[in-house]
Length: 275
Ligand SMILES: Nc1ncnc2c1ncn2[C@@H]1O[C@H](COP(=O)(O)OP(=O)(O)OP(=O)(O)O)[C@@H](O)[C@H]1O
Ligand SMILES: [Mg+2]
Image (cartoon, rainbow, N blue to C red; front, side, top):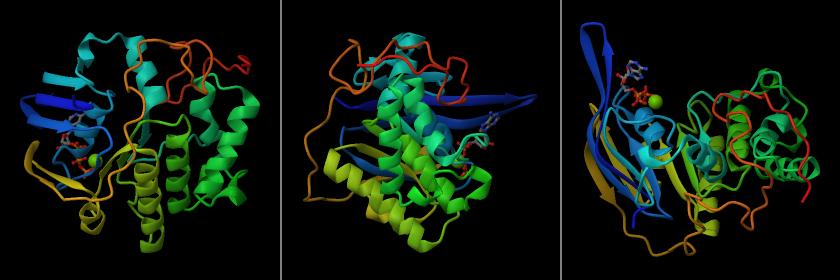
């Protein structure tokens, strides 16, 4: 069974008289543990596609299946839970919250998932050291360079130990050294932990270094090429869609009650929920 399957997915936007076909009939199947890139000209539908895969957006027509389950049949609660705990997003605009420090930005998704304070702080510190930003923990986003902000966004995406990472131009405007660092970080996650990684990029060097390259044009898949690989990653991690709570996760507490990771709204501040 595929981790993600898109069947005849269309996304149309009506703009007054005219209609934009952001996605115009996409069929795509992605297996657990893939390391895949999506390329295509600006406006070809890459971010729209990523949003479908990440259940941030729903198609106008067609189906999106997560582990064989139609996402339109999953309740909001379950979708939110899946998004928050199983999927790590690195958005094209980093969406770091300007009023939070580097460390607090990385902590935020864990706070939303009700991870106890000490635990999430320790994990945020570990993640920042992973992206070589321990010395910027107290900085606010506007005190960071573009590349540093991107690395904070990656650290944040990893916070809840996602099974799927969706990265939209994670190396957008950084130098080649930082690019290499970001890509090798994602590759390590993939090969060491079996995490499925999907990168949208304009950088053909990055695209070539992934195992599969999907090209979009005008909302359609133009080509889909797999490279042979010999270094199979570890066996798949747990299920993406989680139907039973209180599993052996690091995360504790109720689901669905916290603020949304996507909007970053924080209406439900809580430090409770010790294990
Ligand atoms: N909310 C919206 N309303 C109307 N049109 C939209 C909307 N979002 C995206 N589009 C249009 O859909 C098309 C695909 O957009 P998308 O953001 O997926 O492109 P992209 O491939 O990610 O481009 P880029 O490389 O510039 O980031 C574009 O033509 C865009 O103008
Ligand atoms: Mg885009």
